[in-house]
Length: 326
Image (cartoon, rainbow, N blue to C red; front, side, top):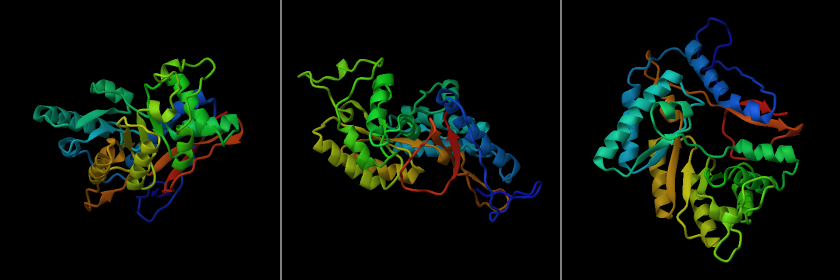
């Protein structure tokens, strides 16, 4: 993150600093802090440090982006709350995207604005609230149980036990996709007190695997082309002929969405896109016309039940705000 730590001074690209925030408490409570804390951190930076920008053209820019994605047949959702410029920016972006969605429908395009991860704005603009399982679910289950080796299987089991397949997109990279796929091939297991798994039996009465009952997977790190190939080969090996979904959500822009859509279409998979910062924090400096760079901030689970939480994935530069659960 770039900011000037000297009070009252103007920020310069060479200035560096750190933000360290810890959230402690029960998981059911502390999880609610993550998105607001990140959004407020970003908004504070662009309100008090990087101030050389305004809102001009945000609706039009979002409309143009939406039109390009929709005309290309992309199904996408807005995932930009965490690193948005501010609330007003996100609302302006929604106006542009909703306008594009209506225009696309009039034109008969196959692309679709599928929803938003921001429940409030989804309600305000009358589009579906959407989301997927987070890394934190797998990290938290591993730390709470202390069984890191079997944490993926346990996380899948508890997820199905709690939600069924209503939230049926699986995130594969918390402990590495190859390790995840080992558990993904196992038959669904019953959770004591959870939803019954009897509905997940095939015609012969055999329990289906997690890979069979999940609608699809989410790609959030690594090389997308390699990931598409891995999942195509995996589903073929498992004998799954149903057309599965891949949700892409890693630092997307229009060019990446179009590229990943082609890769998925050619592999016989259904692509969907969770587009975030590219929509809700795309600004230039008024004085120079140069990019006003968004903050790359993230909150991650640090520990639970006194045990460390672990996440293994391709590293990217970021500011990590640790989140400790009791």
